[in-house]
Length: 366
Image (cartoon, rainbow, N blue to C red; front, side, top):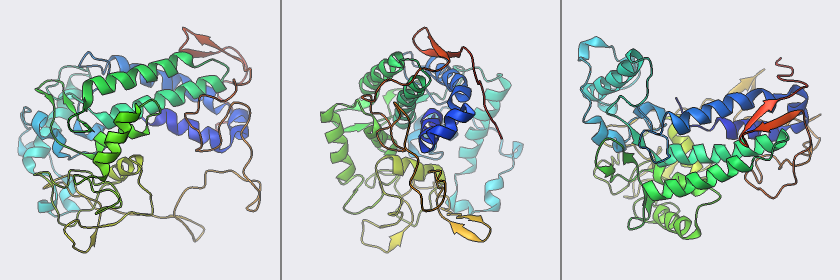
């Protein structure tokens, strides 16, 4: 499992070229799968019973080796060291990687999950993470937009997203600290470790203004130093006991969390807050360092550092205008004021599910 951004990604792909998307039946093809994915997360993964999804392995959330996992991982009996081989050490120094004890716990969680036929709820590791759930809420808003594009109202999904925002605040927000924290479902409540995950709810459209203001204050304060000592939000508390000021090279998923917190892609390096030379992304903690690798796309000898999402008739033409009820690409993604989507061959079931009633189901897959 990875952070649930799939519906948001599908919506943005559609917005890049609505005409081609409609011609191929793109959204009609992916909607049932996306709806099933959200249904799984909001039901089978609600291990805390409060309405939020839980991660059952550190690798699911995107910040694999964060100090936020140390306390819940401490309950896990590690797999014997000789029962697995660490391929990561073929590409990195042992002192820059998690310990054998850490990996023994990662392997134990993965093999127990597999051997239990992926039944949720049996593991001693279950954590409600703010970024995982904020991205799920954002994708629920996007799924509502997809439903509207397909001819349904999407109101139930927008309402669910708004309700989940309230649950996120009730269960993970600490007003005294001005921060969202992970909740250890099997342990002692909130995990008192500050990470960039606690800033990600800033992307939610229904976040109360006072909470958004407090989060911005926290992000720009001494724990993250955004706009002062750092140009990207560090993945972990600059003042935390597990923070390692040595050069840290972050994994791609970590950069995604930093960008989701409002950073600019061009500001990919920062000066160390202690005044040292510019370094890679801030660290997950004392032993949590992975190499940052930027692999530019190459096609016929041409270097391409980013994907071109706007489909154009020729390089000099303007992007195609979105159709009725569709926001511009990457603009107003959660703007609910757009006009009602055009009629299509779909109907809404139980005010939350879309069923294909006729016409193209999948379109051209080529």
